[in-house]
Every structure is written in C-alpha cells, then in structure tokens.
Length: 210
Image (tube, rainbow, N blue to C red; front, side):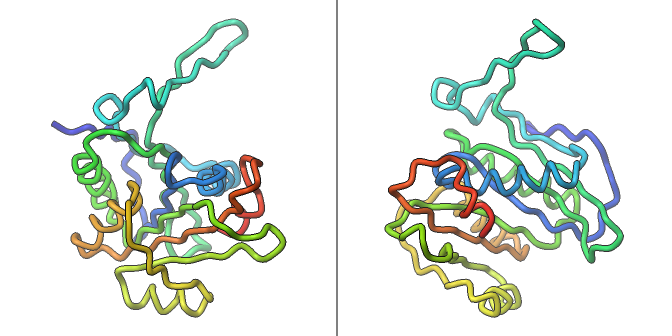
C-alpha cells in the first residue's frame, strides 16, 4: 500500500532535492527554518506528500489548530511535503522537502521517500541538519558533512566542510542518506553546530550558515 499522494506531475530538469526534517535532527529549528526561508523566497508548488497516519505518534508530534477565514478553525496535521521550484537560470530544478521526523516505520517511510525522489528523477539529494554542540556563539558556525559520492565530497572539501566521523545513534536523515547510498543516488548531508547554551529558536545565525 502506497502512502504517497501526488498533486502535480511537472517535468523537472534533473532536480536537486533539499531536505530538512523537524525533530531530533533540527537543533534550534535551524535546518527547517532554512528550508522555510527558501519556501517563502521561491513560492514552490506542492507536488507530493507522504501520508502521516502510519508514521506518527500524534501524542508526541501533535496536530495544530489554526484559525482560517475569521473564526473557523482547522486541524493542521504533521506532514512531509515535496515542493517543486523551477528557474531556467539555474542548472537544475529544485525540490524542497518540508517535514517532520516520524516516530514509526522508518524503513517503510524511507522507501516511500525514495519512491517520490525516483518518480521525479532526482539527480542529487542534500540533507540539512543541526545539532547542539559545545561551541561558542562568537565564532563562525562549524559545518560538517558527509556524502556517498566522491565528486560531491570533493566539492564539500573545497567549501571547507569538515568531514564528519560521527558514530552513534542516528536520526531519519542518517537513515535516508543510507537509503540513497544503496539506491546509487548521490546524496550529501550538511550539519551545523548550534551552541547548546542558547535557547533562541530558531537560531538565525545557524540557519544562515546552512
């Protein structure tokens, strides 16, 4: 059974997918705020969505109530949406993914996520994450990353992105990156370090670095 809803079928030019998921991967909301900024800047069109019912524990990731059209209220459910942006001046079209890390069925979720990207012939996937770290706020934001593609890895080194040697518990971004590695689709992740002692959310300096 598919959990994917397609809203549009645009013809995209080797799209690059940019992903940020709220939750464990998103210290100070830095990564999701970066994608929201691009959403507001580009006004992309929603092309697909992964149905949330089977993947979330709604007592942990709660739906939100929002007023619409005066006094009428509606429920906004957690979602993972794919939004397309086209610009002939760019070498690739862009797919933004705005979402939330699910609590359940990560393997199924990863397969559905991969299916959407393959459906639109994604050429490359970029994951944005942020972590709390013992770094001062007065220095440039440290960025680390990894890639399953040597050409992308070389570009990251040219950007002075430190290669991550992290081992330990992982989130959905780590699972998705491994999913794309096994599917032979180039993927990279960029992780920004946010000062653990600052309570500001979002952390705009970390968002800007991403």
